[in-house]
Image (cartoon, rainbow, N blue to C red; front, side, top):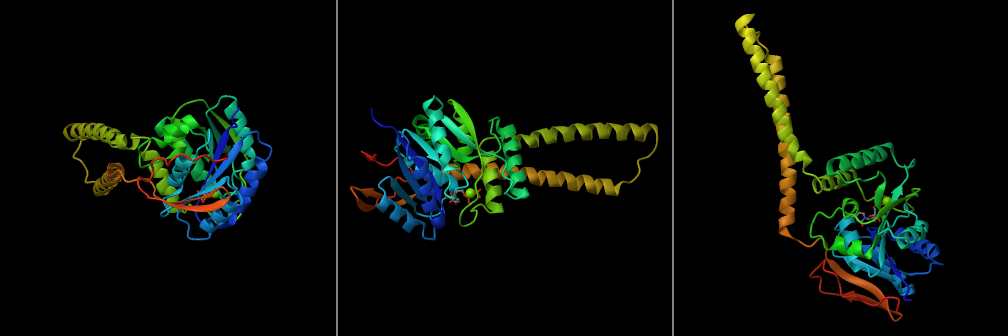
Length: 336
Ligand code: UDP
Ligand code: MG
């Protein structure tokens, strides 16, 4: 029987210090596995030695391939690029920094062979992460699940196994705002979770600054829920009811009891409050209009500048026509 192939997809942005350890850890985890694997490292426009490290790994081991993007397109685009290149019967996505344990991959594969098409790795609460990162992350998953009605568990990062059918469904989705965490929960199929202990980043530092985290969270939520837009309607409705009731009350008071007192403070407070809310909701509206603007341009989500692989023991750096960028490349036979 033909042996199954597992593709391991690693997005890497300035991760030169991590990749050899990651490669070692993957080889160790899968040393006795009854299936083949390929390691696809996506160099997401790194400015350090990442490309060189990928090339030397590919030289040593034909199971390693590099996909070099034309610039930094971001974590989600890099994952998508790797998934589009993968040839395996299942794809495992994992970060380069060893915060996620390659040793858990065989367990994921066992669950896959037992019938699950998606196995999410769920990071257990990470006591080493800062209080800020832990709290914001927990809240993000709560708000996201509430607004999108897609059940996401806190700690569901981008360490997961996806069956070939799921990968094909995901890479055929046309949206520019590709939010893999949400989409992989959204697609359905048989899904399950495995918990894992968070490891420590070996080298370098996190590529997610606070503005990047905020932008990631906003994009995730706006691409899955229109509830924030509806807030304006709800708020307008409540304010109309409140002002009608208050108008009635003031009228009754005027005619039957006393003349109204001047109330500058309350007037200014009310106006500034309403203006504040109005601008906030215009901002929310703008966020969605901006997303439509980005989507209608239909730009490719990433551009592959070149690929590195090792064919018949010879290092080959393939320079290819970068367009169409995120169409699936021609299938090559790996691990014949
Ligand atoms: N990453 C990427 N492109 C980016 C940012 C990050 O490919 O623009 C990769 C990064 O190299 C790592 C993974 O995405 O393999 C997760 O990033 P990181 O570890 O910095 O995030 P954190 O774990 O701190 O949330
Ligand atoms: Mg990390």
